[in-house]
Picture 1 (cartoon, chains in turn blue, green):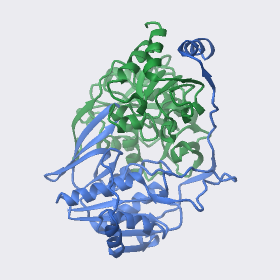
Picture 2 (cartoon, each protein chain N blue to C red):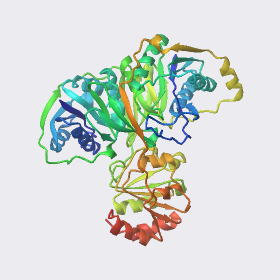
Picture 3 (tube, helix red, strand yellow):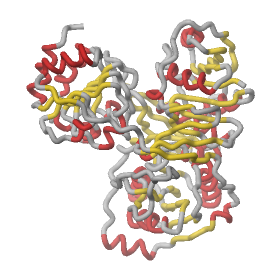
Length: 249
Length: 313
């Protein structure tokens, strides 16, 4: 069976975000980019399924600028077999990404599509669910365990208050949570090998998807900062402050 | 035009997140209809009808709805979209799972985790883990929205007298997905996201066993117990206790961070708390920069003292 993995190029999680002075967005010039961490987990999971003999081919796909080819190369270095970049310099919002992924899924006919549960830039947490809806497939979101057996995938999901397991008929969409796995560091030989793996670039227009944004960002601001309060000498002083000053206990 | 709110419940009672979402719905304007989906949810619907500001409670009670599978819930919500200007759900794991599926079918770009309603089409939502706030305007005729519950006050649970209407007599079970099982943490303490007071432990707790020190204080205060990602990753406690960017977002009246250094990822989950207390032996720990009250000291000394200083509930 074939696995399709979606991966997004985002501002690296270690970068301290700065809001632009004109409030038009966040500063992205001269900022380090990398693969969305949740998507890296998705690639790792697909590659592990391949190593376990469950999956025969892993195709990594991305929607974004030409530079997203680097991000796809990291997926290839982890162990994906080939990659497809749907190229555009415009902002593509989750619904449009889901439509593009649907287009790719119809062409590639994977049994499993694995994506990160959310991208750490827009924090939308939508694309996987939307893709499943558009394809009419089952969805297993926020996965902490994925087991493929007998034409089904058992997904253990991280839900408020604990865990839930669902059985999904394949083909299905799975989105990853943090505890699903720890992505490996790609070895140098694998990074070299990845450079020779096939990477196809498709202009977004060829997918026929209207990517015009439905949400207009009017402004981006910094959140209000909290200021440091006071240090208290001991527990008695703390309890006194909480009772008589803050009045919260 | 009305606003439809997907109620969150556990089959027996409404979850408080529903009340916060109702407040956001009221701000959008227009009558608020609350949708209760489940099996044997008559009592939940009765409680929903009491919420102040709710015009109508729509009830879909069927065996197919025994578990909130997105594949079953989404078609029902889609079928009720007509006549509504907006569809809202709390940004809980259920809301986040179901609503994008609804939005895609309706060809709507969802607006996730709003923290403010500026007008019927303009909202504020956090991006980059809350390090920036975006004001976004939707061009879609219908709005599909998840609500960050900590950003909205709870609507009064009583005082309303909504009409209860049955909307779906029967439903087909999902052909592609099935519920297998659930492992829910059982606790006598309040739910982390709904608690008035939260006390969380970090890597400084050193082991899961040491969390009983926190629990003693929690029980005196009627507080929920949380943890930082470091404590979860170290295996001290289970992930459903995690407060932070990748865990739960909380905003209680009082948040007590114990042995937590204050990584950005943790602050993203608790910085909207009204009062923050930090107990840490490292006086340079970043957590002190956001704490209203800081106590520099060894938690293994200070926690028993704190527990002793508090009256029994």
